[in-house]
Length: 187
Ligand code: 4LI
Ligand code: NI
Image 1 (tube, rainbow, N blue to C red):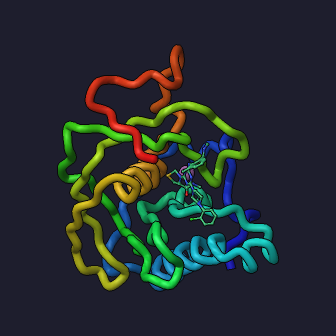
Image 2 (image 1 turned 180 degrees about the horizontal axis):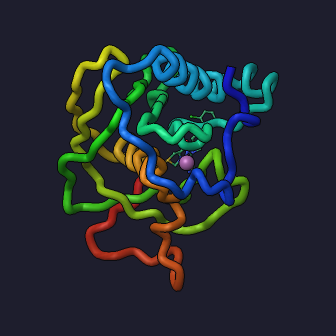
């Protein structure tokens, strides 16, 4: 089971290295790791399990954050309504790639957090509002999906990890809450 002890923190060089493409056929080790990453996110969002195992809640995780330099991410985004309905997005993506994106940008009103960053870094993180992503699922099948708003932001944050990029790289240094034209704020 993945816990916080498995997640490397900023300062670890691996978080700044571009991860390697995963080759086919996908190994059993990679499949198991992907499933465990998604399981971690679910556990971290479960109040009882999070308390029991001292997990910080997250909606996205990249293999790079586990010191595995492979291009794989997991995303588990609960629906914004009630917890009985199915999640907005719950998936493991292998070799994810943004193939097109909107001109319009968006950012979270409260900024971003990261399981590899144990401090608050204030500021807006502008990202594409809408993206089209291709990736391979654990069965090795190519997928193509369109995402918007929160889901698009989370997937961009995780794909950044596979490229050695941290969310605060996108925060305006002189004016962390500066907003360009055509950046909307998601609340
Ligand atoms: C408990 C149970 C306020 C502050 C609001 C918590 C279930 C911040 C937001 C959660 C913020 C769940 C999140 C991310 C932010 C802030 C990630 C709580 C888990 C909100 C996810 C990757 C950025 C993703 C919206 C500094 C660990 N997640 N909040 N950012 N939630 N969560 N990110 N921003 N301000 N990070 O962090 O998983 S993209 Cl679901
Ligand atoms: Ni992160």
